[in-house]
Length: 332
Image 1 (tube, rainbow, N blue to C red):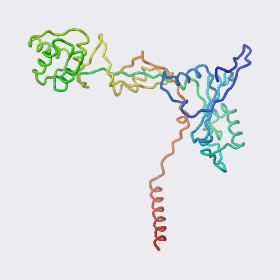
Image 2 (cartoon, helix red, strand yellow; image 1 turned 90 degrees about the vertical axis):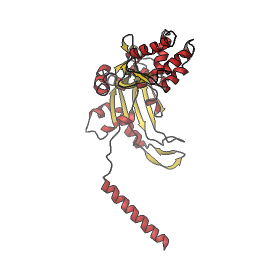
Image 3 (cartoon, rainbow, N blue to C red; image 1 turned 180 degrees about the vertical axis):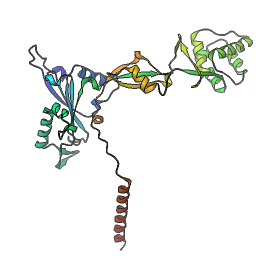
Image 4 (tube, helix red, strand yellow; image 1 turned 120 degrees about the vertical axis):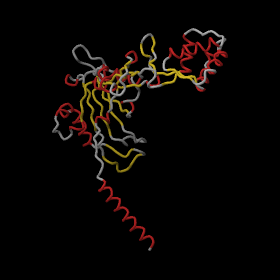
């Protein structure tokens, strides 16, 4: 539909406006970098989204889902440039005299007139805190819906052990199985009994001595070293930090993701939100992705405190009394 919009000419003429009825999923489905998120990003960064209007549920035949009007245009008014209007019209409905499947609600002419008027005055209503429908309209900048999905890494920390479990993992390693001295290695390590080392260097020296003493040579190469470390290395929060070319190696099991608002510095966010809990964490900026989502219901959520317990208790007692009264009539 966007591809069919007429271009705006040099004099500001032409252009198009279109409206699409969606369910809620296009507002947020898809993580940063996904097709859905990239479509939202494309629309918002081109400043084509004029507004989204939330409609009541049970409005369409054979479905009770909530629906939303997306209104897009390439000829925004100057005061709408770079802005998106969110309008909550979910309470603008009346009950139908006769349902059509799951369609039980409809908008009267008065409801339609109210929504249209509110839409036309959206910017003014959003700025007027005294307006009776002020809470139904919110205006955001396009970039307010963008975020950075950052990858938070933590260092891999290991201690090194020779136990039944680590020897079984070593014996199951295909890299180790292919070594000509594999059998001698298993026997040599097994003869050491249960042994533990705090650092990789200490472990390698002890294991190498045991293998040489058994009459075999120590294998070389990165695949062997990695296979050996993966087998006898045990994750330990107090263990040795593993390094690659002098830099801490990230632990894939501790990897986490955070969504940072688009205009916020990711490093500042890390210091404020993450470092108080895990001070050794860092951001892998090469994996950062930009995403866009429109959390409509979150922006219009209004907290309702629960009823007092005394009120709930009184209601339950009244219901119990009513039930007892009905039962007594049945047993007469």
